[in-house]
Length: 229
Image 1: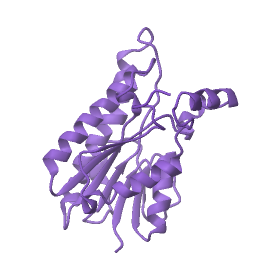
Image 2: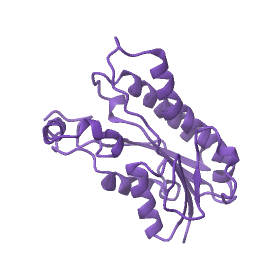
Image 3: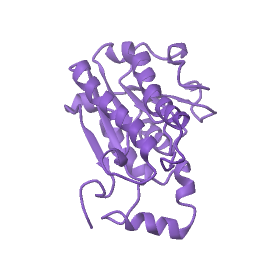
């Protein structure tokens, strides 16, 4: 049975892959991003992450919400400023809060729905230079777990926590063979994240309410968060 989903930040590497999977399954997928996206009549350009109540044309009921926007702001504490923290919180946490709050009436319609947030392995594994992004994603994770409890049984809320993933946002960390090799070597499975592989798990979680999954975090990190290779 075809469902209706919203992907916020569909231009991201992971969001684009999820869009492709859901569309291939025959679902109606609505998308947002700051620029154009090949999704005629179902795409909304959002200059900021505060206008979710202004998205005219969405269906009255949504089966799932995926929030993809994120940042990779790597600085030592000596260089880190309050403005860096505020920016990371605005995109990673407050944007997700506004998306869920704005879409909640639609997610609660009919049979309820599923929500997926993208966090990071850095909330569980201490990594140098990750103070700002780890703090912002940890806030998102705590929010997600609380919402999973608050919104049950109507809405399922889960997180996916990838390690470094080969997306345009991470290009500056993977722009040479040496950097790629060094990143792979830090992972027990000797692999960094692949958007297409991560999208498969997210696709499952977009149906989480049907499958009895809520309040969970799926670590897709080649073993980095739990293993020592």
